[in-house]
Image (cartoon, rainbow over all chains, first blue to last red; front, side):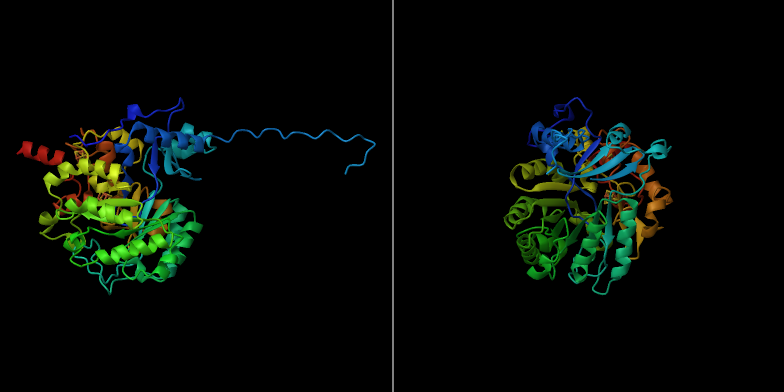
Length: 82
Length: 382
Ligand code: SF4
Ligand code: SF4
């Protein structure tokens, strides 16, 4: 059946070389009986899904090691530190 | 970031973007997580649900004709301390989202206390309400909820036709009050034969009142809706066939985020949508007893709000969720349902359709009798 919209397929989701997470489930919703799921990304272009995966990858990237702090030149030995 | 180790790897909740992410063990290790024995487990049963529906009462005076819980004005209501204890138990198990519902939650004055405690425990509290009794002042007290959804089944008489009471104006006043109080709001719309044609108009009305999301729900034969006129009230097969086109139109033009409930996945299975993509983006089918559970007003755990309670108490979820026999049976069926589900491309998402609907037809451990593919299969077998 035609859904009347451009359909994103998994193959059309742009990704980088790192394998994407198994599942990315948008949060939100407030239903106390059954469980709801966002379906927007099933009907939008690959760009929307790709953008979400890129944002998730960035948020999950291990923090880079901190750059060493620039060191002040040591004061001459005969000077009192301020 | 909140994390929970699982046999498949780990769940990770991110705040920006607001998503729940499932990682495999290698990906989880990169975040410094180590699953040790759990990752060698012989079962893939989850340690706990992702989302739990917490019944805060079975009390309501609106009297909707199709109330799935059969709530009444005299219905049971646990104390604040009991509910705080249940919240602590859910947090200990690692639950991410707790959805407060009733009955009518607004009959309780302690909702701000419950929502703040859920937040303090690291969970995301949300709530569903009819909006009955929601004054602007009360709305301002609900700021700890991540989202509140108001039931609104349809403009132009749709609400009355589903619920038998004229509540649309009440729902719209509640939407407005919540929006003005800065609470993120959505609507819950039950799809029936008579509301289906009004969905887009109702979405437009909700968006104009500040709603951010529309949650579509399948009408299920449970509670007061489990009567013979269910067959007349439910969505009709010809309407089901046009559902994917309706969803596409809502996504494109309503301005709302669009959600469907777990029991509606069988209705996508005839469309050109990609089930692998649905799986990747976390679309849930029947997750009863796996990623979803409910706690009754008595504090017992059920696979979902539509299913019978098990003997498991909410305080026992942390240690015994994986081994409770009735929950394990739900998972076993959904992991490997019989034909025509076994060969269905949507099986991994759908998981055999709705157990509550199947139960009404006579056997909860059969494929969903209202799935078009299941109907065709049954007709061919005759
Ligand atoms: S055949 Fe079974 S798994 Fe496939 S959509 Fe229907 S109920 Fe779901
Ligand atoms: S039985 Fe399954 S599909 Fe039906 S409402 Fe419960 S979780 Fe959803």
